Image (cartoon, rainbow, N blue to C red; front, side, top):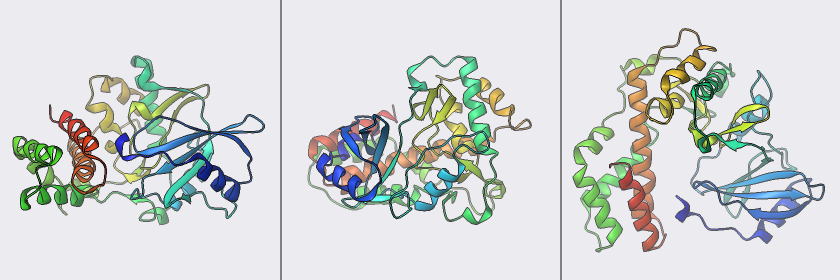
Length: 316
């Protein structure tokens, strides 16, 4: 949701970098990609390229998550991010109350910009499989994201309860959101009830390391093979959390993704209930994110209308 993001002054960023990193950056340029964070290209005097990524204030950016990713990078034939430590040895810093990371620029082409043929689909499946079989220390459960089967449920409930419980000024976006809910009430109400109960078999399955946002816009084709970017959602979950992005799209043949996945996890069979759960969770996330932007944020009216249009597209 690009309308939520406002550029931070480059002088503020340069002051932050000078104060916290042992690197001298000659250029800082806004990088207009993505919608959940800011990104700036950083170029040193020696022409080396880095990225500084700055997150929205409420994003759950966790130091332990990125320490784990840094430790994992290059191990077990897997690459994450080449993260740069601050002078205080941590990876996550703050710029004007926003969490921030600096990492080396990854040269490559976004997979979404190319035709995804069977070979590429198998490579994506293989990449997912190699991530899912990595063994991480048990103590990380709970310290980094760990599946609770209710991640976006409270925020989505809050949006719907607010909509149906209060009288609003006649703002176009708010009235439009209420109309969208009324038209899709049965579907949305089912989503709000989709969390597995305590006896559901999904809760008894082993959790694996997952990317959390593993769609084709977050995979690069590099000289060293496929690499994920945008690791903020990394954590323990069922493998279907990542595979859902390929079972529910016509752009990629899931059969070939599974073939590549089984090169690493030979006996894997997709759990249809888990895939359905994560598809539902994705919709709850959109309701929560867009609904909060429309009802509770300070963005302008035009931006709220844009948010409503983007949310409505999911129900067409």
